Each structure stands twice: as structure tokens, then as C-alpha cells.
Length: 127
Image (tube, rainbow, N blue to C red; front, side, top):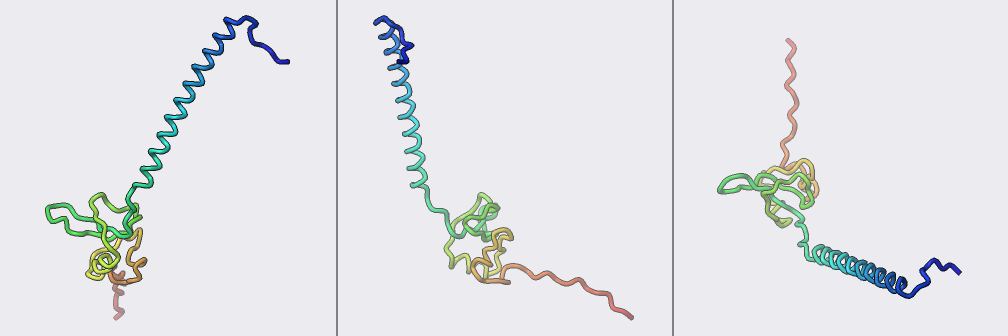
């Protein structure tokens, strides 16, 4: 039998107390980690859903809309507000610029309304 414990009662009791303290310390750490994980999960569930469409706003008192983005666009600035699908379509149809990264005009199936076409360079006439 594997028996490397001390033979006397005093040392055995000391070891038992020492190990009990470690088990208590480990249990407290387990409880703390469980609380942190539960809090993080509550935060994930309580987080509001990201909007489907956003409008980036300009600087100044009027904060006029500058650009339309999809809700998951990484390039959108910090000044923004959520808009509905219909409002995003209306803004694009009215000529507001569409983001070139997330391409909300393509996602909304309204191609060619918000981006100006590339003009062909003028060719020199031959005489």
C-alpha cells in the first residue's frame, strides 16, 4: 500500500487542516469564476440587437446624414443612428451616399442610385 503520510496523529491533523484550507480556497475561486461567467452570460443575453441599417451623421448642430451603412459595417463612424429598411432605401434613393465597404445599396437591391458612374476619359479627336 502507498503510504507516505506521517505516522503520528498531530501531523496528520495538521495536514488535514492545511488541505481543508486549500479546498476551501479552491471552492471560493470556483464560485467567483462561476459568478463571472453567469454575469457575462446575462450581459450577452441583455445586449440589444444590432440594427440592420444605420446612418452615419455629420458634425455640427444639425448632424445631417452623411452615409448609409449596413448594421454590421465595421467602417461606420461613432456618430450614427439606427434606421429602418424603408428609411435606408428612401435615403439612398434621395441621393445619400452608400458605404463602399458594406454596400447597402446592393443589399437593398437598389443598384445605381447612390453611386455616380465612372466617366470615360475624353479621347482626343483626330484631325
